[in-house]
Amino acid sequence: MRILVQKFGGTSLSSENARARAIQHIKRESDNGYSIVVVVSAMGRKGEPYATDTLLGLIRENGNALPLREVDMLLGCGEIISAAAFCSLLNSGGIPSVALTGGGAGIVTDEQFGSARIKRIEPNRLVKYLEAGLVVIVTGFQGITSQGDVTTLGRGGSDTTATALGAALHAEMVDIYTDVSGILTADPRIVAEAKPLAVVSYAEICNMARQGAKVIHPRAVEVAQQARIPLRVRSTFSDDPGTLVTDLPTDRAEHSVQDRHVTGIAHVAGVTQISVGAIEGRNDMQLQVFQTMAKHHISVDFINVTPSSALYTVFDQDAEKALYLLKESGFAPNAVQGCAKISIIGGGMNGEPGVMARIVEALTEQGITIMQSADSNTTIWVLVLESDMVCALRALHAKFDLHL
Ligand code: ADP
Ligand code: MG
Image (cartoon, protein in one colour):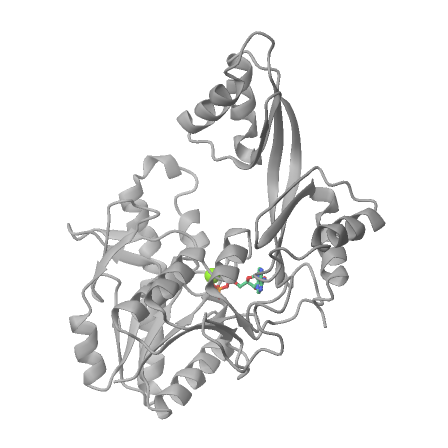
């Protein structure tokens, strides 16, 4: 059996036209001889009747009154509606199919409601349906605990359902269908010239996803990488091949992954830069600062420590608490709210001179101040004011000729 997993995101299921396109993709690959597992998200985005955000709206007023376990019961409904509706469409289109919940498909998770981790997949039942020649539709984003409770995997979790099923079933490929034509050099909602990448490595896209590129969930990429299953990110609305994620050499890229210095640019807005100076006579500043953040579950990023200061970022929503705690410990922190972290990512930038110079050039030309920077062998990060973010992204995209 040659198994293909096809995942359809919310916007790919929200309209009749979109669902018809999805069915064309299923039919084409089924005609190509694949046994097909379809993973579906909830239909549509915020404001639409069965979208995850809409379901959450039902309990917003008194949200805290509902324990996380029951919140997951509610959230799991979106994908169930989607799977059943899609099953009826496929059947009436002459493609025999069955729909399974996450639990029905054997996806067993831990008990961390709202952000559960898949512990194992027992795919026997699913395989039997495939062997019987049915298309198997599985609700994305959810699993079941060993007790039988529904869990959800966190935002973007349907991507992980797709790659985890791909791994468990030894699928030949996992296709992530979405509303853009692949993984682009930047978020097309901000950089109109962003261009789809033909091939990227798991590490590059995992890095981009972690640094804010919401096109695929980083965990999903990790799972595919571990199982060595190639992934394609492609558009529901065209037959273009999209972006292939693999570590193997392919003939699809004009420039191999190693050849290009910069592959893409990602961003995260809504961060606060905090700086704390050492206090005379106290040598515990660094320890105190980071222990305090850790103790209160405030996640810190972009850390830069010198003997006399600690510089780091937190999410805007944690800033007030962080500053309060620091002052309580006797420090006098400074904070700049409303910053954005921009990541310039490329598997081939390692040791390449001049990448940082070009970044500084691009931003200086626009009069943008770099508030902080750091680098690794595959990424250079810069922190700018959020009000400069859009301009910075466009300038960097142009400077590295990513539109070409
Ligand atoms: P789905 O509902 O199909 O899972 P998502 O909204 O999760 O769709 O992901 C697709 C969106 O990701 C696109 O509409 C796009 O705005 C956004 N995005 C952010 N960065 C990138 C990028 N580098 N390449 C492609 N899309 C990106
Ligand atoms: Mg998504």
